[in-house]
Amino acid sequence: MGPKEAESIENSVKETAYKNLLKEAVTSGALDNAASKAELLGELVDKVQWDSEAALALHEALYRQKLSSFLDKKSITDAEDAEMARLQKLLCVPNEARDAIHKELCGDIFSKTVSSALAAGVDRFSPDDRNSITAAMEAVKLSRDAAKEILDDVARKYLLKYISTSRSQKDRISSAKEIKKMIFFSNLVLTPVVGDLKTEEERQAEKDALAQQKEIQEIMAKAKEEAEKEKKAESGEAAATEEKEVTSFFDANPTTDEVAEKEEPAAAPAEEKKVEKEEEPAIVYQKEINLSKDMELSDRVDVYRNYLLYAMTGDVITGPMGVQMVAERDEAEFGRLSQLGDVLGLNQLDVMKVHQDLAEQAYKGQVEQYMTGGVLTPEKSAALEKLRESMGLPKETADKVIKGFQNQKLISSMQAAKAQGNLNLSKLMELKDAGVDPTSVVNSDMLQKMYRDEVSARLSDGTGAFDVDKLLNQIPKELGIDADKAAKIAKSLSAEKRRLTLVQAVSMMRQKKTKSTIESLNNLMACGMADPTGAPEKWSEPEEVSDLFSLYCLKEKDESKRSGVQAALGVADEEAANLKDMVDNGAWKFGADAEEEASFF
Image (spheres, one colour):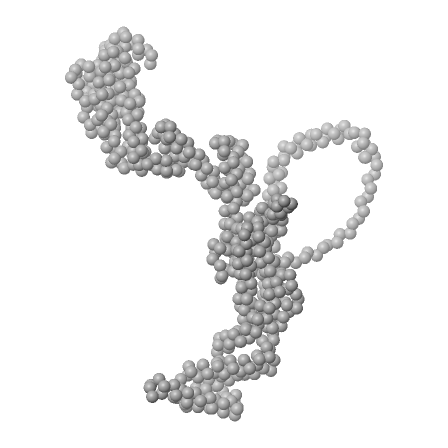
C-alpha cells in the first residue's frame, strides 16, 4: 500500500469517527447547549486528530445537503428556514459560505423563474410574469442582493441577444429598430422587475435624488429665462421707444371702430375656477442592468452613434414600385437615446463625445459648402457661427474645423503654384504661419532650392535691405533647414555675386547711370551682410572705387548704409571721412548727365 492510499484511508476513518461524534453531540443536545459551539467542535476535531479545514468543509457539505433536500419542492417554509439558521449556528458555517450556497442552490431555481418570465418579451410580459419573480425570491428565501445579482446575469443575456440580432441586420435602419426593441425591453420589462427587488430605503433615496435634480433644473431654467429677458430688454429699448411714439400717435387719432369699441362696455370675463392639476411623477427607468461588463466601450459607443443617426434621419418607408421614402422624424427617439445610454452603461462624457463628433461632422459638411467659393465672407462667417450655436459645438472645435478647410484650400493653391512653377519661399511661409507643415507640399531638396532662390533675390533686389536675422536664422528655423547649411548657402551666393556686382557698379558709373550704380552698390553691401567674414573685392583703379563711394554718399545720407558700402568697397576710414566731407561740402561733382539722371530720385 502506498503512502497516498494509506493517507486516504486514514482520513476516511477520521471523517467517519468525526461524523459519529458530531451526530451524537447534535442528538444529545450537547452542541445546542454548548456555550461556545466552535470550541466544542474543535474538541471533537482534536479527539479524532483530524484537520480543522477538512472539518469545516464537511460542515459546509452537510449544510448544502440539508438545504438541497428542502429545495426539492422548489421552496422553503419558514420552519425550514429557521432550521437552516439553527444548522448554520451549530456547524459554525461562515456567512460568506452560507450566502454562496444559497445563491447557488436557491439561485438556480430563481434564475430559471427569471429566465422564463423575461422570455415573454415586451409584447407578452404580464403582471403574472412580474409577480412570479418576486414570488420565487420569497419562496426560496433568497436575499435581495443575491436576487439582484442573478437578475443582472440573466437580463444581460437577453440584452445581448438584441445586440446580436441588431448586428445581423442588413441595413442601419433595421439594426436601429432592434436596438429600439432592446430599449423597450429595458423600460417595460426590466424596470418594474428591478424596482420590485429594491428596498423601501432605496426607493426613497431615488425619489430624493430625483427631487433634488428637478430643483436644480428649475433653478437653471429660471436663471436662463431671466438672462434672456434682460437681453431682450437691452436690445428692445430702442424699438420700445419707437413703438411708444407710434402708439401715442394712434391714441391721439383713433379710428371710428376704435371709438365704438371704447364706448361699448367690455363683457365681464367668466370666472374660471382654477383647478390645480397634480403633477404626475416622472418615470425613472432602470440603470442598474447594463452591458458595460459585456461589451467594449468602442462597441457600445458605435451602437449609440448608429441609433443617434437613426433618430436624426428618421425611418424609411418602402412605397409603390420599391421607392424608399424617409418618414417624418420621431422626436421621441431622442428621449430613448438617454435610456439607451443607460442600458449601454455609457456615462455623460461618453454620450457627449458621440454627440459632439456627429455635430462636428455635420458642421464640417456645412463649412465645406460655405467655402466652395474659396473666400469666407463676413456673412458666411456669421451664418456658420449661428449654425455652431444651434449645434452646441464648442467654438474651439468649430474654429479648428474652419482652419482645417482653410489650410486645405491653401495647400491646394500652393500645389497649383508649384505645378505652374510659381511657388516661392514667401508662399511657403504663409503655409507655416497657417500651421501647415511646408514639407506636405515640397520635399527638403526643393525647400533648400527655394531658400537659395530667396537669398539670391535679396542679394540682387537693389535695396540693400538684407535682414540677416530673418534670412539666416528665423526662416531656416521655421522651415526646418539646418542653420549651418543655411549659412553655407548665403556665403556661397555672396562669394559668387561680389565680383560680378562690383563690375556692374563700375560699369554703370562709367555709363553715368546713377540709379543703376546705387542699386549695384546696395547689392554689394547685401553680399557683405550675408557673409561678414568675406574680404572686400579688389579693383585695379582705386580712383573709381573712391568715385563709387562718393557717388553713393551723394545720393544716400543714411550713415549706416554709407558704412555698409564703405566696408563692401574696402575704403579706409580716413579716406571715407575725407570723401564724405567733400560730398557734403559740395566739393565733389559727378557730372551733368549724372545730375540729370539723379533728379529722377
